[in-house]
Image (cartoon, rainbow, N blue to C red; front, top):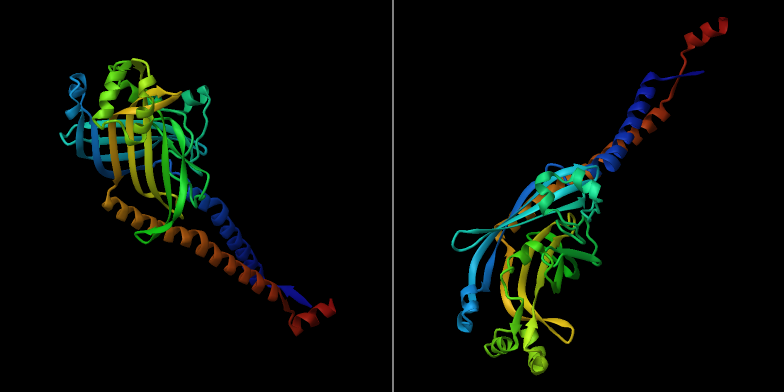
Amino acid sequence: MTKVRKSSIAWLVIGVVLILAAAAIKWLILPSLTKLPSDLSQSQKYEGTMSALNPQAFAANDLANLIIPEMPISADRSLTVDATEGDTAIVTSNTAITLPDGSTQKDVHSYAISRVDFAPVRLSEQEKQSLVPAQSQSTFEGHEGIAVSFPMSPAKDGNLLYDSVTRTGQEARFVDEGTVEGREVYNYEVDAAGPIQSPTVLAQFKDFPQQLPKAEVAGLLQAGLVPADSRTVIEDNIAGLPDLLDIGFGSSNMAKVAVDEQFGSPLVVDQTQSMYVTVPVNGEDVAVLPLSTVKMHTADSEVTALAADLSKNGTLLTVAGVWVPAVLAIAGVLLIALAAKRWRRPVSDSTKATLAHV
């Protein structure tokens, strides 16, 4: 005859608890650690140059001084979470561009994104009023594509990057894999153009004439100021254009982005965004006058610091998501096996004798 060991019951209970703890860490706690934090507040520095239209020269038709040469600029972009509800976050991107004279230009946008994969979240008007804080209502905009960061373990294909100037999602074409500061990265390229849709940007051109004389376009062409991609089209068609041309405003965006393979964070961004006056030619908007060209790249010091942070976070995530659950699960299985092996113990001879007389 045998009897259940109390220690085996304890080992069994502890083993089950350890396995449940491993499962909870893996499937409950770890996903919450990889969500966008509700108290996110971070910033990143960029460096580059800017060239722009000289409004005084434009008004005087001074083509020789029409474009202000490239001047060095810097930018600080901050990301903050303004509000959360479940897996939805309202995130504000605030970029301050510092010009050589010390003045700054602000570019502020607020978005609704998923805290899980950072994808756009569509809000009804009622949801917008209840979720978006009052201070972010004026800068909030619906969007398509990636506005903040790629998701963790991003796909190579099918990614759109949101461009706030044209308010479109622009294809991020996968180029190849690489390494930045010891981190494995995916390299993407964006090459897109379209009409400017941002009300804030369009407001900068409110005093611009609504039409350009064909003769002025011809002068721009002769002076070599028409963008290179447009020259052949203008040369071939200018004779048949009307004397006055309705204008529009367009933007081109070329960017190279190195994205961390594990976390989806952009490690290096190298972007050139140009804005133009456009005129209609054969049903297409063709750029004829540069308004501004901004070339920006992530500051080297930021790349080094971000890579170090990602490496540290990657180690912590591996420990928390792999090693801790594995150790707990293995320990739990071993304890359950030990409990099963020692589940019962033999009854002593004296006890047997006592039971036999009962």
